[in-house]
Image (cartoon, rainbow, N blue to C red; front, side, top):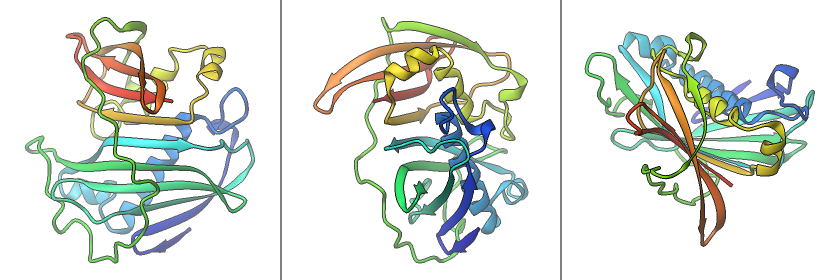
Amino acid sequence: MSEMGCRMSRELKILPSMCDSKSLLAIPAVFDTYQNMATLHADHFEIGPEGMKRRNSFWVITKTRIHIDKLPEMMDDVTVNTWIQAPERASCERDFDIVLNGERIIYGRSIWAVISRDTGRLVHMAGLYPELDFTEPVPDDKPFARISKNFDGAETIGEYTIRSVDIDLGGHMNNVNYIRAMLGCFTTEQLAALDIHEIEVNFISQSYEGQTLTFARREVSGEDGSHAEIAALDHEGKAVFIARLS
């Protein structure tokens, strides 16, 4: 593992626990890897789990987009990179890629924020990072999609009751577990038919142990082609999580 200011790189072997039914890196494991690298890098600046505990705060992801050209296979050796952009007032961007045999096969962008445990409100980014040379490239400059939160009339594809194993150190459902629960609404054949090459997710509000989420799906056509939009809805029908699959 190496740290170079705002960038961190790590060699990783794709192990069986990370793979899907085709022995490829599972999509939730891509997000797991992203989250793990973010934690390692943040810890380097003393704003990982222990650093946030001292600040009585915790990190949350608000938006993530992952683009997949190819998924590595079980036992492949890959290089995982993560790097940060200059922070905004109350959020920051973290980027990510996976490289196989010198070729970037997966890349992503995400927007993060810090929440105070005392107030439940956003914490300003000022002073969070040391002075760094923020010159790392953005993997793509496409803006995040605007996805309507109104899923009235959308097809219900499944329900999921949040369990103890879904809860993270923030006391709420871990962001990757929304993705696991969503993809678990499909059979392996249906997932293969979806042929996901890009997944963009918006984390809207927190969910807790014992809550039951309803997953609803709609098909949308636009200038960039057709895609599926899926929401996790709470008991009032409000979206707490939205994904765009294409």
